[in-house]
Length: 471
Image (cartoon, rainbow, N blue to C red; front, top):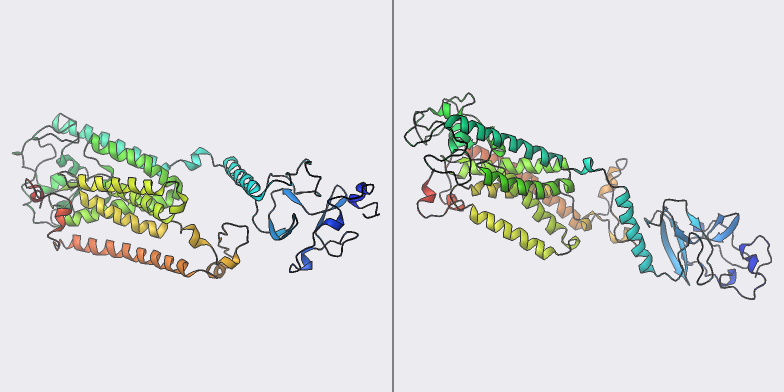
């Protein structure tokens, strides 16, 4: 033992042996640079070890709890050597506490028992990270799905206006003549007059003469006495029909209580969760792009005399994002197969129901396709693709997520894997595909081209003349 009275272990000088005496301490790894150990070696030691001042004493560097970050460079006989910047999350928000190894079975005020294994400490760190995240959780108003709530409120208000206007025009808020609306809502004529997606109001059409149309207040098939301008409203010009905005306004209209009820349920539950997950801006882009994209496909392939309303296209875009998130982050889900099965069943049931009269399956298909494409563009890359090459990781770190330093933008592209570049190629391809989708379908709609004779069977069953209505 050392005779130096200032040496911290001098209090053990009357003992014959001490397990933590300098003679029993492990020597640093020969491969570790001496520059990492700037402090002088203790008496009796032939190598430099890291030390820190604690309560006026020099002690071997043993980190037990801190907000600081350290990196393991070598381990020998229970001693660990650290340097900064490794991302190791420790115990509390206080200053780093350093202490010498203690007797087996003892515990100082900021120490963890030396017998705790690595797995236990790692479990503790994981628990502390979760607890820290809970402490730093954002207030509710910053996590609330404001866009979902806002668009849902607008849709409810518009639906109330539909009922009121239908009651004023026909004496009943629900269509009962000439037939009952199974969705428990207004007539299709009223929906056209309020902004539903109706092709003759949006482009020149030879579907029917301008003088033979039902009025918004029609309750009989014999009241086809209104002009197309009266039916479409909003200053419609029959010489140049161009109410393109119906691709947007139709998202806020619904055919009845059942229709809006199911849509709001899915929108608030699934849409609200997605908005909290990806953020309001990305969610709004997905919602608008999918909803409008669904109506564009519907305008091309649905019956020319068919009116389409509802947010189903946008909601199928939300379902597509949910499916994409599951596939890209498969290992992060507890029961991914069950999640996948549930989504597939939901999609299949919705598609089958879309074959029934009164439901526009083209809006569903278009919204789903655009949702997949916008998801590939906007969603975060899978975590494994956001990592640098393996040689850049620390041995004990599970993930080394790369953050973009705007002062050195080119650093973001160094040491990337082939899969990372392929993923960005997929993103660019999805972006190009969305542009092509909109350009081609809008051009096809504007020129009133009918180049797909079999497409109508994606939205109807060829029984009882279902596929002849509106075409």
